Image 1 (cartoon, rainbow, N blue to C red):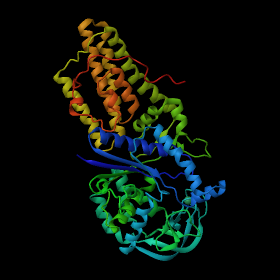
Image 2: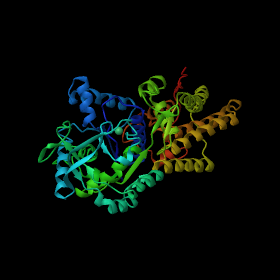
Image 3: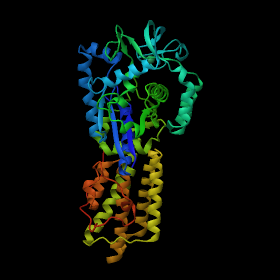
Length: 505
Ligand SMILES: [Zn+2]
């Protein structure tokens, strides 16, 4: 049995969560759920990155302490993810001095012992929006391209992490055991290495950054974001402390799900930190793109920011999970459009899936007879093929392709239903053909379970399959038997048809 440890980036809670946060959590959740459904043991961790200048400044503006600010905002993230059915097992907060800090402090000491840290006077250009030093090369017309603002010239003492010396080792690592998915993102990251590496600022003077973890043995310095934030992936396991749980790191497949903007930190700095601290490197970096809104960058000034809550209120949790998984291919940028959302909702969910289930159940209910699923070599072969295509796609993290294979199958089901014209048949013939479609819908529900869990369960409850009540539990596994045509033992009759997806005006 494989142990899977999957994480997302930790969110910066200086404002409420946005669609980008949701895209990432849904992607990771689909993967985590799929791991569980195929029988792996899973630990799924999310959390918040709570230190830094921006939090410090936002709190100051609001006249509260940074701690008060994060304590107020973190529940916005937790509540949203709960509502979205993100099946995380652990939520880590970097302001947690009991769970997070001891690992970070020990890690720092190990890096220092390995000679990987060096104190230097640093003169550089600092963008307070980016919260980092930026190079003159990155500026456009003398301004930070992201914040449209000239950086300040800063001279200060910093601890540096010696990354430059790891270039050759990193190149080998990224070509062997630390795999970047999808391939397009891997090439992009490897090209960063070819551009050359710089050592990384790992601390700032307390006078400019006080809200963070103090550097051990140098209390006038505060750890800078990377050493603090990246370490969440192992602090959640208590690594380097008395309560450390090494199994989930040393004896697990470790997958970090992140956005393309932080790929370089996860691909380069993080493994080099681990190496110097004597900890093994992760296995996989799954990188997603950005979401635009109606074809343009989401921004407050354009007034096109989509609030996740608004989408959920109008269409429901599963419609949002479905849209993000179906419409945005993993690794690429994608678009959120209300018009497209309505189209997908009506076509794929309401008409194809919802109506199909309803038609089959209403007709079967009228027959008031036991199911009689016809078993043929042909059906057995085609369902095995469908499961293989689906599983292969999910196993290789092509989430959109997996879900699209399901919606294509449901489209076919609708077409076949119309061709079969069961309403023209009578008695046993009619029951047989309807049972055939009920069985096809049972498989559809199982394949939808990682993407739209509540809906998958609703379908299964209406179909009245014996395992319907257990299928949202974390130890529910899609067995070979359940994947077989006619493989659901003890399934005799169907339940009451109910509307799955209502009309939304
Ligand atoms: Zn900036």
